[in-house]
Image (cartoon, rainbow, N blue to C red; front, side, top):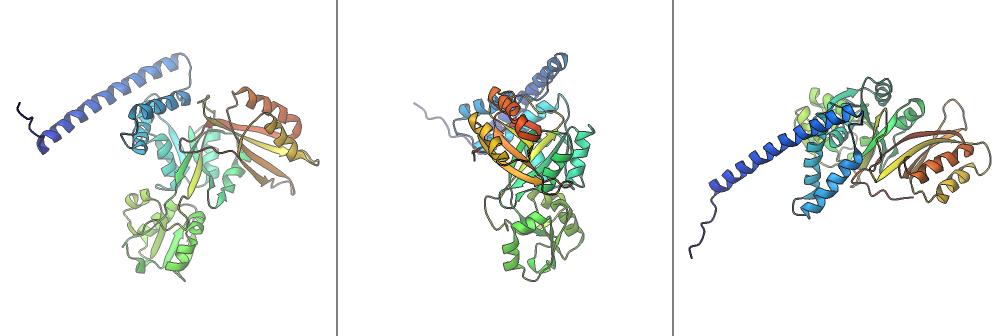
Amino acid sequence: MSKEPEPTLLSLRKRIDAIDNQILALLKERLRCAQEVGKIKNRENRAKWDPQREREIFDRLRRYNAGEFPEPSLNSIFREIITTCRLSQKQADVAYLGPEATFSHLAGVKNFGHSATYRPMETIEDIFQEVERGRIQYGIVPVENSIEGAVTSTLDCFMKYQTKICGEVLLEIRHNLVNLSGDLEDVKRVVSHSQPLAQCRQWLKKNLPGVPRQSVFSTGLAAQMAAEDPEIGAIASELAISTYNLQVVVRGIEDYRGNTTRFLVIGRQSPSKSGKDKTSLLLGLLDRPGALHDILSVLAQRGINLTRIESRPVKSEPGKYLFFIDMLGHMEDAHIEDAFNDLRPCCSQLEWLGSYPVAEDDPARSI
């Protein structure tokens, strides 16, 4: 019995080309199917984004893959495919804290893919204003960092503007020192947003002692400044390196590994249930002893798991605070809706900020 010849490099490359052509043909067919789905949704006046359906797709793909194809890459590939097909039904405009190549920009791409239209804003408040007024469909804003804590400007904007949380994104933060030359000796000033400067303070103290630091409103602006001044070293994202034609001086200069920032997607309307959701509330306490205990008791009696609680002062009323609470579940769940109604007599102010799918890489631990 003759032995089959082993494949050659040329034959394998031809096979890969044929597979690529098949993939492309199937992608085009998927896009056409998604566009037909969009037409049906338009006729029935249904939302374009169905988070439960998307979660079911990812769960099915992971089961079918059985770990053979690297799972993070699988998720990334299909996130881009699914988002592109969804955006073919209606293009998404996304506002983020600019300029280009900030971590907010990266978080937007992680959530919406590259097919969305991204619009840089000068401040977080600008993002809320544009979304509230309906000039931009979505905004993406940082809300907390695993090392530095809450982003207070975002929390303050939730107290001021009428928007709804539509989703969340967890982005692992890797800080890079970049400049025009790639030479550490050329760095005479370090520029970045205040949080990256704080997250790299020990590295800077050890490796650039005496070099002044300057805080600016975004890492993207810092990268822009480094592209224009050879004496500036910027702490910036991977995306900034290619966007502004910079060289890497040192990668990963953050003081602690596992540094993660949580971003929230804001819009005019929260999505329907996905099956694994969070709900966020903004509430004020009545002026009486045990007011916070009463609120937490209502949630505990309903068996609701809290994932976060944060207080912010009311600027116009010294000594008064509002609380931001995240909990597992969706407002469409009976126990969440009942708890919300039971909280009304316990609060001086109560607002539902939104219900949205838990980030896929979030363990959603309760506190």
